[in-house]
Image 1 (cartoon, rainbow, N blue to C red):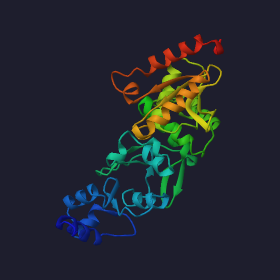
Image 2 (image 1 turned 90 degrees about the vertical axis):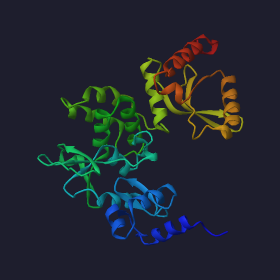
Image 3 (image 1 turned 180 degrees about the vertical axis):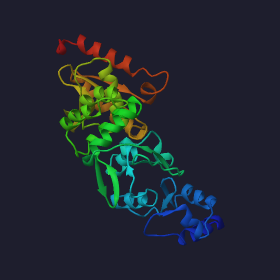
Length: 315
């Protein structure tokens, strides 16, 4: 079956673009590609558009070298890549804002004092760094993983801050002890009170941002200390609970749409039924329980804890 003429036109346009490296909107325009065509190619999966002003052919591997090449197109050498962009560059994709995989986020870049970038591609400002807080990657200055975790812990909304810190900690580029000790370096900085409360609760085992936020709700309820990814032996191998306290046999799991759809439902029900038969209380939390004005995850967790306390095995 012949391809539609519109698709043939887009494929011909794609062939005129760089095939082995990322490129800018200006380069595409020089190749005779309009912004409308670029947008259509992104919508049809013929191009990726991971950061504002930068595109790439989809077959290029999304690795550190590609990300550095993308950022070098828009970041001046004297500036420092920071915050969510730095986290993304280090590999902590869980630190991205909700739905950033559905849109093109601006690049977070800070300039030395006395300078400020004013192009539409970046979120910019001025920030002071100690020498040890900036590392050079592929010709770019990037805030270190530890400094990035502290900045995101200070400056993001509390839920997103905690999720980002978990995601960076999971990379094992700094220790949890180093994170807690680093907090005092930001005494007097904006957001340090939030950072000081979140840092001792950061863990490495969280599998997603919502799992981290669910664990934060657990802490907010004052429930016994939780662990991430607690292993329970099942009849057909090991089961892992997202968050749990072994002593009270209390667990909480986040059922996101991506990994807990209809295809997974039967297995989830079997697994949880078996775990509950072993004396565990398993609280299942979904998107509507965790986010928005009607969120009630804290109430579900409290009810689960009270049920666990009533069970003879936990008395």
